[in-house]
Each structure stands twice: as structure tokens, then as C-alpha cells.
Amino acid sequence: MSDTILETRDLTKHYGGVHALEGADFALKKGEHVAIMGDNGAGKSTFVRQITGVEQRTRGEVIFDGQPVKFDGPLDARRAGIEAVFQTLALADHLDVPDNLFLGREKTKLNWLGPFRLLDYKSMRQDTLAALQKTGVKIPNISNTIERMSGGQRQCVAIARTASFASKLTIMDEPTAALGVQETAQVENIIRTLKEQGEPLILISHNMRQVMDLVDRIIVFRRGRIVANLRKEETDGQDVVAYITGAKTGAEYEGAA
Amino acid sequence: MADQAHGVGGLTYDKSKRGWPNEANIFIALIIIIAIFEILGQVLPYMNGQSFLFDTQERFDSIFNEARLRIIILQVAIIGIISLGVTQVIISGGIDLSSGPLVGAAAMIVMSFAQTELVNGNPNPKAVFGDWAFDLPVLVPVIVGLCFGAFIGAINGSLIAFTRIPPFIATLGMFLICRGIAQWWTKGQPVSFPTESFAWLGAGMMPVVWFLLLAVLCHVILKYTVYGKHTYAIGSNEDAARMSGINVKRHKVMVYMIASMLAAFAAIILSSKNLTAQTGMGQFYELFAIAMAVIGGVSLTGGRGSIIGTVLGAMVFGAIQSGFTYIKLDAFYQLMAMGTIIISAVVLDQWRQQRAAAAA
Image 1 (tube, rainbow over the protein chains, first blue to last red):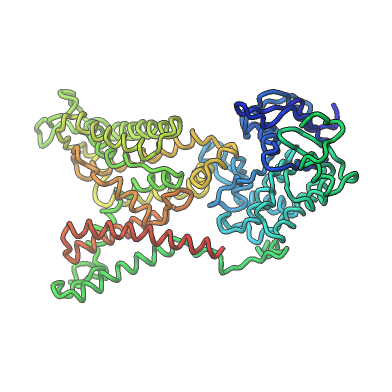
Image 2 (cartoon, one colour):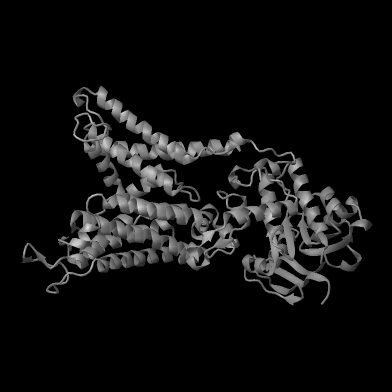
């Protein structure tokens, strides 16, 4: 057993003749935070979709927590411990925060009643407050329904949900793309909290400052291929942009794109 | 812990934004509607100062016009039972158009199992079971009816969950099928004269008792059980529900089964109350049941609504119907006015929702 939580070998996805992802070799250590950058259509989201089972890969291997895996769907991946926060938030708008956090894994009483077993509202509420505290998420009133919340608060709930269930790997696809300054800061704080707790993270982002602030390593995608694997200390914004635009290609990836 | 305790980080909790419960609005609407009819009764020249709500002719011991109140709640009780199920279906993001014809079909089937052997010493002409003449215990027709409802509901739910056809189409088809079953069962003959024990089920104020009992039960399962939470979740965001590990397909089948069983139970009560079953029974019931739910604040897009709202919606529905009759409005105007009121209820509700969303 190594300290690698996720590894992909030759991960490839073709949509008909379009090679959206070509031979991606990637590894993530436990506790490591990695950013994935690249232009639109570079293959970032395709890469994540293969890992989380949203789509089925054309070729290649995914090794998660030491085991080769092949998820039939996102639910499978979630059961295995990969939690993803997608751009379209998977929250039920008409339910409040504890309901959303515990959706599908409710705490119950009188379990012999089967589908009509009673919800343990009190205990779920307490656990929600504890989970919010743990992740540093600040929600003014957890009894509010999601539809009454701002975009940032929604994002925070989605992330808190992801983070509060002892997942082995968290994936965030542009979590702050639609948020204001203050809300972005809040989300970034949560990410820092995850780092302190040693939970590994894959972050897809276009925000250079954010990436430089938050992660250990930057992977650059270009035209479906990984073209750079940069340690944060050894690079800077301009360097990364050079890789994104194609002005430079990492030495070990020569001939890739 | 006080709510303010986690209201830090630049985000403040504004208590004024907390929603005024929708049910309170419906309750106020109910009172206003009754008041309007009361005033109309005093104002309209041909009413001779009759009162809508109060006992002006000293016919009863109480100050209220008990006869009218009784009619209002009796009128809504049976369709109200259907609307309890329809509420759950709509909250889950679906619609059930088959409940009215299901009432007709279930009533025919149930009644044929409930017919008594002798009427005034003469053999009761059996609609289906010919010479097979003895009284079955009351439990038999009730169980047969509920099983029939569960069967129809299971088909509805399976069609919607597994073939992914829109609920509107699936239940519209079932609408026609059930009307067909109602006529085929006895080749159009009415079925009459149930056993005494069966007649007891819907006698007097019993429909109201059943309605309220079932309303409490449905309120509890929607509000306090996993079944209820998942019903709201599926109606609110089906993808999120699936991603959370909820078995959406199985749950939908269950919701439609419960709704159809409630409709079948309404058929049992209705045929018991009328002491007969006819093929045309339950006409428009599916639409009235949907109307009650909608007036009660159940959102047709799913995810929002409550049993308390639906019960109040049913009361509003009954008060309006009874009020129209009271001010001697002709039946055709009643239908037009009813339609207008249902449309206004949805428009008002949507407007209110948009305003609430804008305020958040």
C-alpha cells in the first residue's frame, strides 16, 4: 500500500472521433490538494467525469485507494468515498440545510417501520451544526430552505455536505465561478480547513490567485492531454499561463500536444 | 442553541425574511371567503337577510348554522381523501389524473363484494356474482378495494418510473382504462344494497371522520418519516435525490400506490354513503382533488405543499361551492367561477413565490 489515494493510468475518453481526453497519467497523494487548470475544452471536466463515473471511459485504469475501480455511476463513486461538488449543485431547493446534508442517509428512529421510519430531526440538526463548525461553513439559519439562500450559501452547503461525510477524496468543479468576493473567501476558507484536516482535494479552477493560494500542485490540461505537472513553489502565474496557452510544454510531456 | 450563534462571517440572519407559513394565508382566505358570503347574504335583496354561517332561525342549539357546516365538510370529505393522495403525488413532482375514474371502477368492484343477500326479504339482484348469495364480512370488500387501488397505483407508478413517460400521459391513459373497467365490471348495471356493516363505513358523518383520520396519518408520514422527506426531495430535485442514493423509481411507485389506495378508499366510503355504485361515479373528482391541493398551496412543479394546506384548500373549496349555492348562483356560473378561482389561486401563489425568492 502506498500513500497514493487516486491514480489514473492512460485514462482516455473519445466522443466518437473527438479525443476529449488522451492518455492521462495522474496521481494524488493522501492529504494533497491539486488544481487542474486549462482552457475551456482542454479536458478538465471530462477527466473528472471519468473518475466520478458520470461517464464511462474509453480506455485506461483508475486506481482509487489501492483498488482498481470502475464506477457505474456517480452514486457508486460516492459510496466508494469520492465526493464531487459539481457546477450544477445537487441540492434539493425546498429542503433546509440538515435535510440536504442527510439526504439519502437520514438518521432515524423506529427503524422497523421501513420506509415510514421516523426522522430524528434533533440529532440531525445537532450533527449539522457540528459539521458546519468542522468545515468552517457559516450559514445564518440552518432551518432556512435552500431556495432562500444566496449562491455562496448554497455552494457552502454543498461543500459542507461533501466534507461532512468522511469522504476519502473531494472533487470541486469551479466552486467559486459564480460567487462574489466575500462568498469566494468563505469557500476558500472551507478548502483550507479541508487541507488542515488532511483530506485530499482536486480543484478545477480558472482563478490563478485562488489556485496559487490554495493548492500544492498544479496540473495543466491542453487539448485533452496533461502538459504540465508543476509544484506550486517552483512556478508562478505567468509560467502556468504559458503552459495553458501552449507556449511551453513540460519536459516529461514533450510530444504530448 | 440560538440561531444567531452561527450567524457570523458577514452573513446576518434577518428574522423578517423568515417565511410566514403558507397555510396561514389559506386560513385567512377561508375566513375572508366565508365573510364575503355572509355579507352577500345580508346585501343581496333576494336573500331576505339569511345568514351563511349563523343560525338565524333558532333551528339549532348553537349559534352556527349546523346544517350548512355539516354539508360543507361532508361535501369535501370524500374528494378530500383523494386529494390527500394527490397532494403526495404532486409534491413528488407528478400528477394523477386517474383518481376520479378509479373511484368509479373501485366503487363498482367493491360494491359487488359488499352486496347483501336479501333486501326486505327479497333476494337482492346480484350484479356480478349471480346466485352466490351470502353476506361477506365488511373486511372483504374493503381489502378488495384497497388491493385494486394498489394494483392501479403500481401500474401508474411503474409506467412513470420505468418507461419515463410523463405522469400526465400515464395517468390519462389510466383515466380511460378505469372508466372502461367501471362499465365492463357489470356491463353498465348499477350495484346496490350493501350489507349493514358496509353501509356503516360511510353513514352520517363517518366520511368526515375518515378524512380527518387519514389527513393526520398523511401529515405524519409526509412530515416526520423518511418516506415523506424523500417525496419532497424527489419533487424538489430529482437528480439530487438520485445522487443521494434514494431509490427514486421504487419511491415513485410507492407514492402512486398510496395515492391510488386513498382514491380507492374514497370509493369505498362514497359507495357506502350512497348505498349504491354507478359507473359514472367520481366524475371530475380527479380535477377537484387537484384543485383542492393547488388552492392549498401545493406547487405543481413539485417539492412544495403540505397536508394541512390541502385540508384547508378542501375547506375553501367546500365553502365556495356551498356559498355559491347559498346565494343561489346557477350551476353553470358556479363552474365558471370555480375555474376562475383555481386559476387565481395558482397565479397568486406563483406571484408570492417570486416575491419571496426576490427577497432572499
